[in-house]
Structure formats: C-alpha cells, structure tokens
Length: 392
Image (cartoon, rainbow, N blue to C red):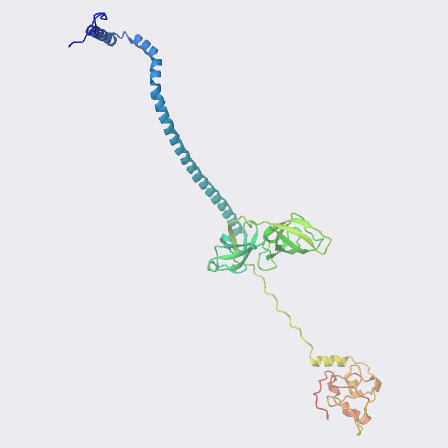
C-alpha cells in the first residue's frame, strides 16, 4: 500500500525532482569552483558568517577538553614542584657541603702555613667529639700513642694556643682547653714583657690573670704570648687579648682575657710533637755541716773569761777530774789560745773556756803540775778532742 499525502496538502514538485535539481546545481558549482575558481569569495564570505556559529557549536567540546587539561596540568605541575623542591634540597646540601669543604680547605691552608712558621715538628689532628663531662672544657682528637702523641704536648691552631694533651690512648687523645678551670699557662705581655700565669674560667670561655698587682702595666687590648719558662709551650705563641682590667683597692687586681685561638670553632688542630729543649736544672747544693774539729777550733779561737770558782779537792790534794779524764790548766789553755805565749802563766780569774765540750775549766794548778800540762802545746794550732774515758 503506497502512502501519499492527501491531495489537499500536496504542493510543488516532487522530492525526486528536487533531488535531481539540487544534485545538478551542486555538480555545476563544483565544476565552476574547481575549474574557474569562481566561488572562493563566496566561500570566504560564508565562512566568515558561519564562524561564530561554528565556535558556539564547539564550546561544549572545548569546555570538556579544558577541564581535562586543567586537572592533568595541575597534577603535572604539582609533580614538577615536588621534583624542584627535592632538587633544591639536594643543591642546598651540596652547597653547604661545598662551603664546609671550602672552610676546611682554608683552615688547612692556614694550619699548613702555621706549621711552617712554628719551630719543631707538628702533627695534624681532627676533633672527633667533646668530652662527656659537661663541666669541663675538653675535646677528643683522632691521634694517639700509635701516631706518636705523648702526654703534655701543646695543641695550637693557626691563631694561637688551644690547649694541652692531658690523656693519651692508643688511637685517640684528650686535650684540655685553655678555658678549662683547672688549666693554667705561663704568659707574657707582648708590649711590656710582664710575666704572669693565665687561668681558665670554665664555661665563660675566658682567661683570668690572677695575683696581679693593682699598678701592673697591663692595658685593654694587650696581646698575651707564651713565655716559654714552663718547658711545655714554645715561647712566642699567641694566647689571648686583654679585654678587661679592674684596678681594685685590695692587694690584687683583676684582668680578664679573651683567647685568640678558635677554641670552639675549629675542627682541625696541630699537635706540637717536639717541645723546646731546656737545659737541665743544676743539682741542689748539699749543706755542709761544720765538723766537730772545726767547731772545737773555732771555740778555742774565741776565748771567753769565766769567773773563778773554788772547787772542792779530794783528800789527796788532786784537782777535780773532768769528764774527759784530764782537766786543762791555765797555762795549757793560754798556750792553745792565739796571741798568748806558751808557758806564760795566766791569772786564775782569766782562764779561757775549755776547747771541748767534755772539759771544764779549773783553777790554776800548782807549779809542779804546770810542766806536765804544757807538754801538748805544739798541737795548739789544731787541737784534737780527747777521747772520753770513764771517770775514776
């Protein structure tokens, strides 16, 4: 059954005729455009007119594509930012490492320069860590007895003295810094030559010159160097700079100094392995005590007048016996004394003191006993003490 519109609404040509007419027009236009290029202006005008409609039609597609590209771009940017941050951190670490290497290089160059300027041999050491006791000022170095470190060696840097080796282990050593409260170093004022001893003040990081006279020639800004009189530190090494001088009314003044060396900044130090050679101390002189003979001669050379005292004689008329067994007479004592002619009798009141401690002076003896007492006169120049005999 063929469908067709009602005759009332049927108008114009048929659809087949219209298709054929439009097809012929299209073919003619295509032929005219391709062969004669006659429709280019028309095509441009139509494109210009239809461009807004075309953009309006493409808006939904562009919106969808824009949203997708936005989120993809956001994620890619976030990832790129993270990568850049990691690169920045790595670059910062490398820069800090390079700065550290640069600082160490500069310090090592200065230490090498100081090593050439310091007399004697020295050894480069690196600080490993601080000591465990927080109340002391000590550090641990990576050099020990296996490398030739000995107890008491001084430690310096390129600016001055740092401390002294106080403990030594096989592969490490302990250094007590100058600022430790139990550390002291002999110093000398470079300007005036005044010598003193600098003591550490502990956690304050400064030094103190104790027992200084109130009128001592010390000024703010003076440089203190090692005096070298202790035999440990070589003379002429920089130690500290005077920062405060207080002249009190008491017996001593107060002088505060700031160390010149990098006590808390350096990581590499120099250990002076050769200490200055000092001549040995001379031996102490023995105190020579005077012998008994010299003492007796001295006592005999200095006569002293003793008062005459009557002595009780025994029944036989003999004089009293002394502890030595023979009592000197006045004539014998006069012969022993310098400036007295032997044989000349002396009064009993002027009898000299006995030459020995065991003898006691007596009164003048009878004339018969005088020749017997004057017999030992030739030994008057150096009288020998008589041996003590038991009294009979």
